[in-house]
Amino acid sequence: MPISSTALALPVSSPQENPTQLTLASPGQSPEAFFEYRIENRPDPFQPFISEKATSANINEILPVDEQLSGMQLFEPGQLNLVAIVMTGDNDFAMAEDTTGKGYILRTGMKIGKRGIVTAIQTNEVKIEETAFTRAGKKLTSKIVMLLKKEGEE
Image (cartoon, rainbow, N blue to C red; front, side, top):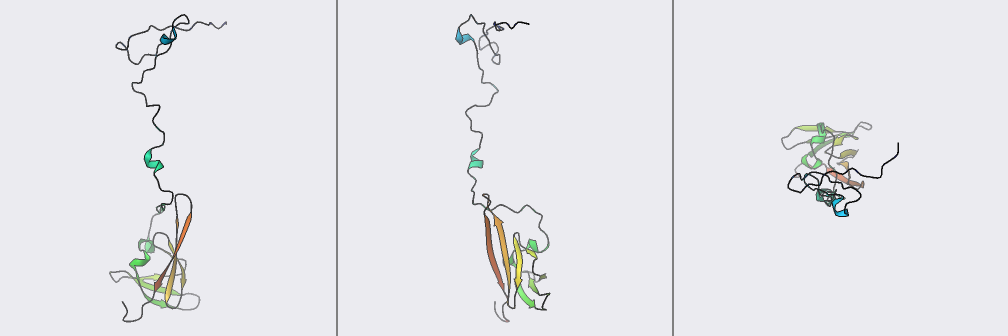
């Protein structure tokens, strides 16, 4: 089947009759009548694909924690007071209380707060290491020390 070199010609209409119509002209017509583009109901081709909100995100911003928090993860280390440390050789633990006076037991390796892990229990302190990640993937580590206060100290 041979291919014809003539194009289909649709009737050219004025913009008032049908604003969404695509118009093609036959090869003998002028180039101005060859194609009409209507912008109605179409996106702006010069609008950027990336929104300002996405480009304004700070790459050094710390990512929020996605996991469900439970137990000691509901308390940040600053919300607890260290009241006792029990040293038994291989099974050391510390006792802390919240502002209401409710007590909790802390052991090495236990998660505390959103990002913290108890790393060491010593004779007068509990060491906690918090690890966070930024949007750029950088790992931030901070160390927190909970001190055991002597009797009478505030």
